Image (tube, rainbow, N blue to C red; front, side):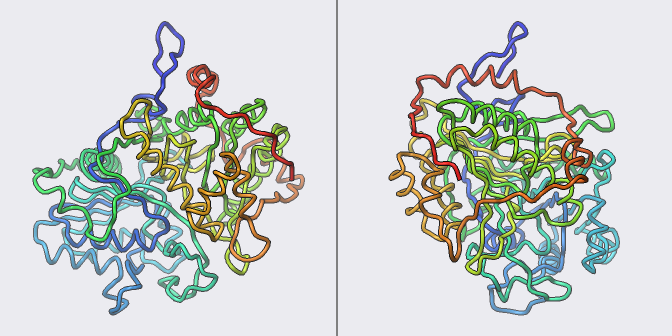
Length: 510
């Protein structure tokens, strides 16, 4: 999407450096972790084999959590803090840095956790824990990145903190899903993150060091000689989804302290909506961004526009978040459903075997069979311009000789996620999509069950007078970015015609 002569130029690519992403770099290996159990286990292994440096850049951090409670052994020895301390004591060349959002300290106090700034005084010199205060008033440092030796990088939606650990079974009661302070059982939690190696990991290392410097004032040099043994960085038990694939990094960085606004995440969202041909699958903690909702509504009004399948939690995590995001969701759903004259939109909530809601914290977007985005950014206003965010994406480009392989990986991950929510295999999802003529929404409806684990259509509550005011004014989650929808729409819409879009009969309402 390059400006020439004052106007937008259409491009075949969704991922455009300087517009919808920051950089596109090659990943030697690329993997996806669905839910935190496998992620935490892989992170533990990566930290223990680190040579020079590990950087944690996050919204929250809890050193008491168990990294792999499924492993036999003592509970305390498996705690994150003990693992980090053991790693630096075993390797005199290793340094570990932990940078977390400063307001997250308040939440930590409520969980019985000693603040990070005090924990730092108790740890070895080469294990440094500090807080990030470099953000606008009301803003949050929301990225979830861990970089190991600049040759391995985790990035996505999973915070290395309490209440995140769960398996993809999402049992109603899992004996290992416990809060570290009280050991109380916690509820089912769905989340997703990614892992890259090679130049893509070094790019995320650049971003992590930049954030470390802005938060602490300390500049870190890249890890030297990182390319000497990159294969050794990769955790032994992690199977790559893809190898030798381009990965894009998209950011949100608020205007603050002399740094200009970066809203690549929002521009990618708009590009996704504008360019989608058949379907967009979305997992997000919220559905609370009016600009994106209005763009979706415009596409839903087209006679043969794409479908949108959205997976959300039933309610936001916390009273204030529900007031801010829940009221916005109810209002925006009304807007979208009014525009959905062809029945191509549905928002679902996943439930357990006992029909208990699963909390959805994942931030995933799958566009047709051409783009997979995993990140930290939610579908709300603050993720577009107030909080710092980091999303990573892969795209299937026209003419790529590996297009079929990449497209299969993109749709395969989507089918795996839907299979998890619906309590069926990924193959069953793929078969249902094929049987329904390529319609993802019809496939979901054909697989939904009235009992047991499944997806349930979300019914918004009555807003009431106060909720309506909050929804109408956006008081608790205001827009902070310039509206680029028309520019993005003109850049992507012209190339939709005649490119494999199939007409489908209208979906039944309900």
